[in-house]
Length: 382
Ligand SMILES: [Zn+2]
Image 1 (cartoon, rainbow, N blue to C red):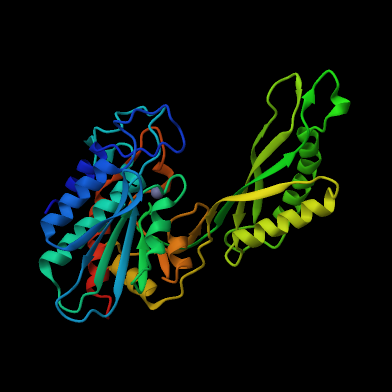
Image 2 (image 1 turned 180 degrees about the horizontal axis):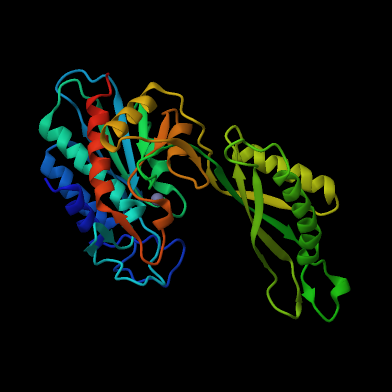
């Protein structure tokens, strides 16, 4: 079996760019299929039970199981995403996997192929060594984390037979136990189109949206001033895009805003949208509108589970120390936690390197992450 560093180098050399809705990217670098094939070949070599779980055409999660010879004290789920963000503007060869000064560089090196490599190496070592008393481990390498979370949603839809999950993201070998959630919805106003030379004959959806937007801005201000979480801060709302109209000489019959709402633990996307609609309706009662949810990544609340301490002990044994903290970015962990499996985020690398023009990861961290995960599974019954 390959070392974590060898696995990481192979994975970075295989592009798995998430087009994130774009159509201008070459097919030779987009989507996860080539990485899935590679991971499948690796787990097939191990002789374990695995399956490709179809998510979208040509996009599969890969799920593999290690079942120890004796009854396991727990079943762990290790999850990492196969996709990366695009490579525009990168100042290095994104797929060269160059190693220099203890760092491996390339797109996905840090986010999150380093995490895949650590998880797969630790998984392979469990299969090879079969340490007595170890946990059962399911590895799930999912698609589309960087855009619409399709992979993890399909993973949880099938039901998760696990007691505790570790989701790989670059945490610098610390444990992330909480983050905000994200809800995104589209809100539309309608109008009546007519020729712009007789605007009095029509109803402008854009003017309607302008009145609505004034109410939305006030609502966003109130939200930002509302009860802050001591660690995560307040909930927030932002309008990221306005679309409307068809031509300069037509009174527009359509306008749409794309709303991004960051949620605290305890909030749900449905309740956030309902509150938004009620507030906007109060402030602009004469403006008809409709909303449609586009994305729901729930918040992650602090996992209070004995296996959080177990993971912490494994980190301390390998890295000497660790911290538990919250982060501002969202991860697949919250979807897994919402499906009933307590989840934390852990992995090699620094989030500051994710999505950057010269993305890299410290190889020492990748090797240590693999050691941590192996020890965590081995000691899960302690
Ligand atoms: Zn990531």
